[in-house]
Length: 253
Picture 1 (cartoon, rainbow, N blue to C red):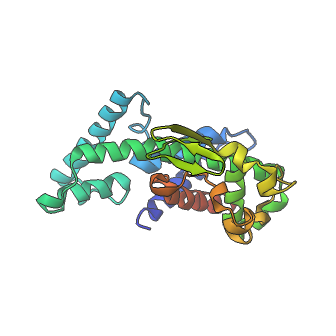
Picture 2: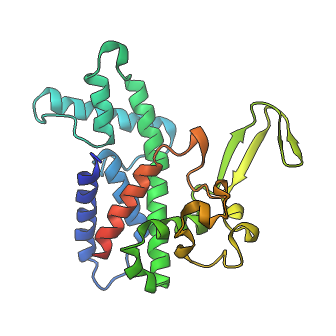
Picture 3: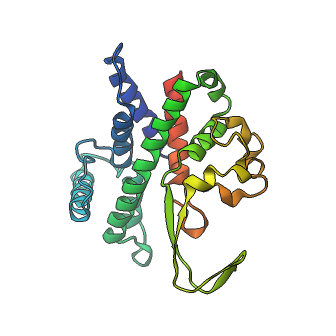
């Protein structure tokens, strides 16, 4: 993955900072928030963005202009290979009829920043917590990373609910759902359903995913949706998983 080297650099910077905390408590959720902010825009000061829509948009535009200015003036050879850099390459290097608009670049950055940042930093924080409680899995994690991440997402899904709109009347079991009905799908109760997961549903047992999601859910994979499902599945899900794996591997070394 083109962004993996930059991910590794960000983790190295974070771990170097942690060395100064030796013997002290570390607020890992805040540390991971800064780490994921750094990964999206590669500029920690710029990435301390106000979540108000207008302020977030203005900050992203300023980062874009600064990135473009450095390339135009020759201070940098290219737009870099982080997420923003890839979007800017699609804007500047493509043919006119295939060129990504700046508005699209800004909108994609907003979506990726808001959704991807919270998903990754919360997942990492929960994983660190469950590994601190279940120390026997710290060694196992090196070999069973996917199982541990899936089990953490089962216990602590983010987001805890999804909204979907019924496009046409449809029957689901004994229920008839009319067109234009808004549905709120909550992952938390589904991920903790005794009938699906068994009596140990509330226990931290990564081995339940040893046969994949299908095996863990007793042939009901739709019961596990930490990143949503279907065409509106989280755009940053693969990014979040890869980033989490890289960070955890380096933390545990």
